[in-house]
Image (cartoon, rainbow, N blue to C red; front, side, top):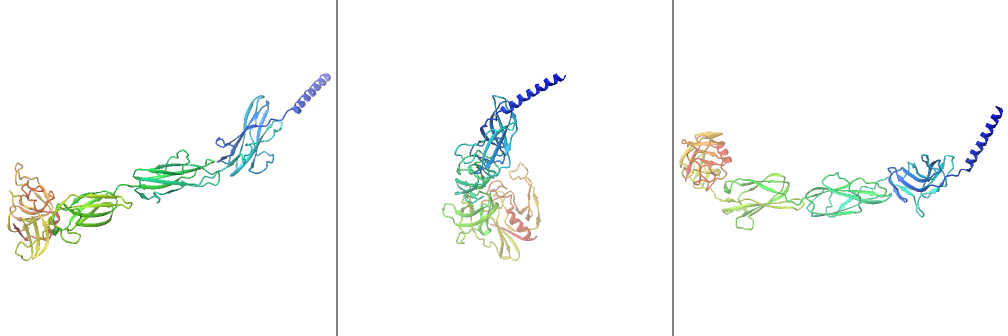
Length: 495
């Protein structure tokens, strides 16, 4: 047993001696090759380039001999000497003999500025390779860190200078600029749309843009800047508005198509699609120059009115004839509109007393003038155009008295449906009976034309056919007479 023990011990010593010799003969790792640098997201940072993150991953190629290899890097600020002490050590990897592998180490917490770095390999026996400096000859820094975004782009326009303003331009020119104290501006991205939010297009290098004939509406120009490190600025935007259409108006109604200035003013009602400055001109048919020009001023969107008293610019009553108005619109940015109206017939006549004055309230209806006059004694207090009986159903002449008043009142035809004089049941607001055979003074909602010519031989009850014998008045006149004339008021129907 002792002999065997001695043999075993000698064998062990021999074996141990061989292992020690192997260790002593082992070679340190070879230097790393093909050094590279990437951002935390994996994007390649070219040597001399920029990183927009404070974390950088350094990689290198290592040739193996079958053992374990671990990468080490040292990072130093630009212009500083290396100390030969690793800043970071990467994960170890066994690299088979005759093959190569790519190893990496990551450094975090880098501040803005330039950096150089070097790399080496360390094996499982703590033997290290020589340091290899990254970069190329003559290069200032291996990489630089810039984590700050450029300033928001400042946008200006030579054609539309007011931010958010309204314009009627057909060509719009914009330019922009941004500042970056780190890696510098690499380019810009811009987009035009109707809303504040927009997708960001690809990077370009233009610092200005010109648009031609963009449509009417509200517009937003979006601009972003990006620095060389890849940091994008906040959105810079410029609002501008285009409106090349004139403010539009359309006529809604006119008081009457036959106008006697002595009976009161003529009133046109029109509607504006948006606020505008409006000017009115009144023309006599056949004349180029207006008889009156009126500045209506700035009017709001919606329903508006123009009132004319039948006088020219010198306050003289105009002559009889056809007249029409023209309204002009102008907005704050210079868009102009021109809107003519349909014509009206103007027939100025000043009423004369057609009867011997008598005290108290008194109503006179002139068949030849198709007019009604209301007097208090000899003082005329109201006058209006009216429509009297059709030639086949004339209004009776003579002296009468109002003996019944109704509000409202329904007229029912005394003629059968087969008669040419038949009319369906019709309601009015105010009716005053002055002759007991069914003759009334009343409003006529079915009629828009009163005065001379309205009592023609057409079908009774139509605009140019007279009445069935009653005296039709505008609603305003009927309302006045109903409250002004009590039961017993005299009514004279004269030729």
